[in-house]
Length: 157
Image (cartoon, rainbow, N blue to C red; front, side):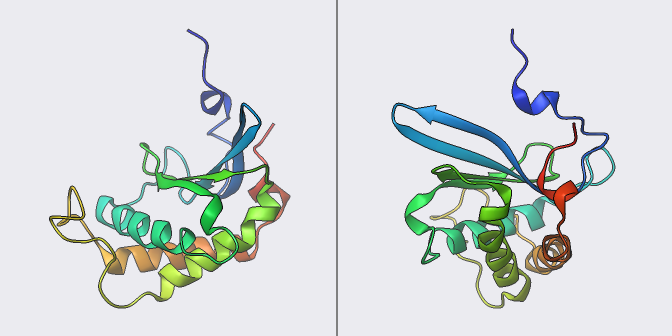
């Protein structure tokens, strides 16, 4: 089998940041997948409750963002628990998506109140949430986003 592109990234050299993971062309449409790397691979991982709460908060935020709401296809966690994936309709660079990601994580870092979509009817694992952990992780990632340079926006080569 052909190795998928994400397995060709050197995870030993990967820094926290926002990366274009792939750009797909489906007919005349383009989809950009972003790797929102919040933890160092093979060294750290997100708490299950915190990542689940971040998924609910950020997915709700980006799907309601005035600029991008109609272009958001998916937001959710990576299986390795080191970050999130964001799929956007259209061709975008890390620099172009960074303002949206900053807005979303600012929202999550300051969020108070009921977590969106947290009931047995709305969520498949409604008891697995950690708002305090999500807020801490969002604030920590926001520090990375606010100081992001080329090494945080381009995969290592």
